[in-house]
Image (cartoon, rainbow, N blue to C red; front, side, top):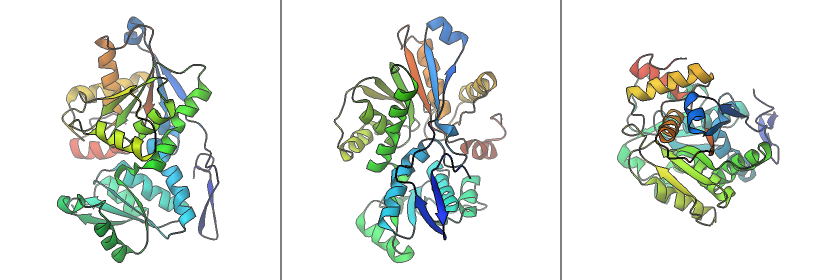
Amino acid sequence: MDGNLFVCYLLNRRIRFNKSMKINSSPIQEISSSLLQAKDIRLLLKRDDLLHSKISGNKWRKLKFNLLKFKELDVEKILTFGGAFSNHIEATAAAGKAYNFPTVGIIRGEKIEPLNLTLTFAESCGMRLKFISRTEYREKNKPDFLEKLKKEFGDFYALPEGGSNALAIKGCREIITETEEQLEILPDYFCVCCGTGGTMAGMIAELEGRAKVLGFSALKGDFLTQEVVQLLQQSESPLYENWQINTDYHCGGYAKWKPELIEFINDFKRKNKIPLDPIYTGKMLCGIYDLIEKKYFEKGTTILAVHTGGLQGIAGFNARFGQLIDV
């Protein structure tokens, strides 16, 4: 158990959390390449994938203050929502196993057996899975639907899909505070991949307009901008204008891919010894390199990209499509 990273401990089979939930800061690693040198760009990678072996990256950040609230309310279990390959489902299940509390996952879509690697892992951690239709899944945030779930599962602490809420934003703000402690000056750009927008919203809120934030959508469509706005409003943060979401690098949508993406991921790992997943971080870094090639960033720019984890997705991807990604 990564106790030095996730500061909590068990006593008499009851979960107890340190009040501050302080963990070690994730390291910042500088990336070198001929492209970066030629374009006079400095690229730093904040390795949130190293925060925890199973509750890594932005999933830990989002869970941190939600777990503290869960403990404060003293309810029995956490219930949350996600798709069949959800990193958030896996992280919540892993937290439940590691720190001894029950979890329930409401999964979008029909149950397909055998279960994929993500859901197999979630079940192995003790998470109860309930599969619902995509139509019913759209009702997940409505009070009547949550009441039906309480009748079935008892009282619970509800986490939204992807774990993104005001408390998640509070946790993601720490990406910026850590970076300020680690670096002498703020980078010109912070880059982050986006699925629900929670990580990006936390970074925007903490920066308070002092540097630009560029999000890379993993989903097709332009709805994420409004999602980020809503999350900022929920957290009572001003709507700063120093950010935007790029929708050019999703490769066709969530979990979609192109051969050039896989080539980039494998080449990046060979050269930098850093794995990237094909759903989120791979698309973001591929997008950053393409924008550098196209002179989107001025010479002398410093970019800090956040490695949000999600590496469990590599095994599931390879199981579906063949051993395309080097492991």
